[in-house]
Image (tube, rainbow, N blue to C red; front, top):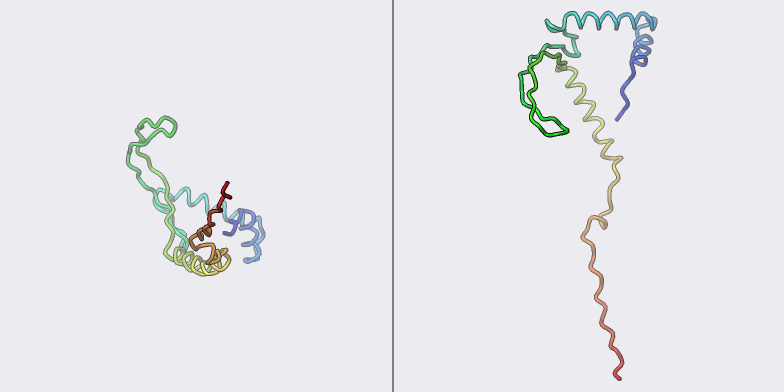
Length: 131
């Protein structure tokens, strides 16, 4: 699995592709983030990528992992990112393209190793000399 890109790698790549300076791309990301945070309660869509939506989580019972005692978890509002169909489809195509390569690289055990172990040949008992 490939390593994910860092923020500076993303900014560098976009600066190179668009011909903008890294400082301008950084400013764009900062403004986009600020806009997303401000508009999140109403829903914020990035076309072709996905959408931030506010989700109401109901109160529920949970367990303290250390003691196992049941605890009440309060209801809360949280943000959720829902991927756009285009992003899901692109990820699925990429996953399918990588699958045959992954299978080809996987070590395959020889058929003999998968077969049931052979029984040891029976050794005839040796006769002790008569006294």
